Structure formats: structure tokens, C-alpha cells
Length: 234
Image (cartoon, rainbow, N blue to C red):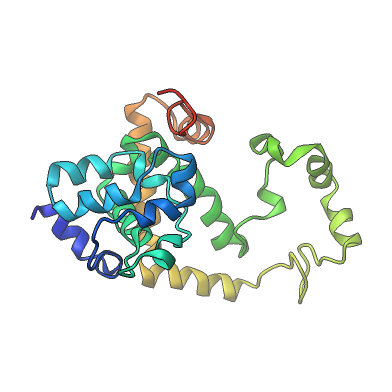
């Protein structure tokens, strides 16, 4: 077995998700992502099982490991109770740790998502929050929601929310002591270290591509090439 495989084996998610795989393909048959993306979890598990460093490195640098939605449908149908989704989690974690995620289009999109979602969680206590939701970045939300955002204080008040207020209620302000606890959880569980790795390697990739980090953030968020979906030409 290779060095990268040994590093993967250190992740409990690989040990829990890859025990006695018989490569039957049930995970691929049930996988929602495989229906749309050029994605085959059975092949990924097969690659990991071979333990070849070159193959695993190629996987860590590929778009493939970022197609999974981590829904764990694979676990519910696997006759041996393996979890291809857990294997994917381990691969993603190692890809970020080594900086390989910046070598693929979908991997580079980790940066804008990490930046946006974790900023909201750590600073506001919400994954998504109206104060940081920009309609120009999400035109699919439609003109009605654009209007809602422009009048959010009035709209949310009329709907009974406690937008930015003290005490209980939807969209209330989260007390600082609770935000401090969230930050402590990130620190203890390795979340902070992971965020730092994503930013470090993303900044390095931005410099390599001749972009500022702001330009890189916008580019990785908006750019999507062809060839990712089953119904597309390469």
C-alpha cells in the first residue's frame, strides 16, 4: 500500500466506510449524484482499495470527489454496510490537508463556499443569513426574493420574525457567548485548522492564476465548465 492510502487509513471515516466492499455497484445504483454527474462511487472505492499512490493522488486532485452530496444513500443499500460517502469525506479531508483540492474546478469551489458559510456560522450563528445573501450571486432566487431582501426588516417583522433582535425568535441575534462556544467547537474538532488550510492553499492558487483573492473568489464561485454532467458532451 502507498503513503497516501496510509494517510487515508488514519481517518476514522475511511475505516468505518470501507470494511468489506465486494464492488457490487449497489452504491452507484442508488446514488443521486451518479444519476446526474459523471460519478461512480463504486469506482472510487475500487481505486482506494487498490492503495496505489498515483491513482489516489489523481483522485485527490480530481473533480470527482466533489460531486458527492454526502446523503449517505449508499449506506442504506450496501449489503455489507459500507459507506462510499464516508470514503468521500476522508478523500476530501486529505485533499484539503495536502492542498490538492485547488487542482480541480469543483475543488476550488470549496473556497467561496467555506468562506461564505463559515463566516455566517462563526459571526452570525446561521449557515445562511439575509444580511449576507446577495441576490446578484443567486439570481435563481428570483425577483420576488430580491424584493424581500430590499425590504427585509419590514417583511420579516410582518412575518413574526425577530430579525436582529434580542431574545427568542426566528433570525434573532445570537449572543456572543454562544458564538464563542461555536468557535471553541471549531478549534477542538479541527474545523479552524481546516478553514486555515482552505484559505492558505486558495490564496496560493489565486497567486498562481494571477488573481487577487477577491477575483479568485468570484471566479471560482461563478465559473463552471462543460463535461461534468451525464447529459453533456466532454
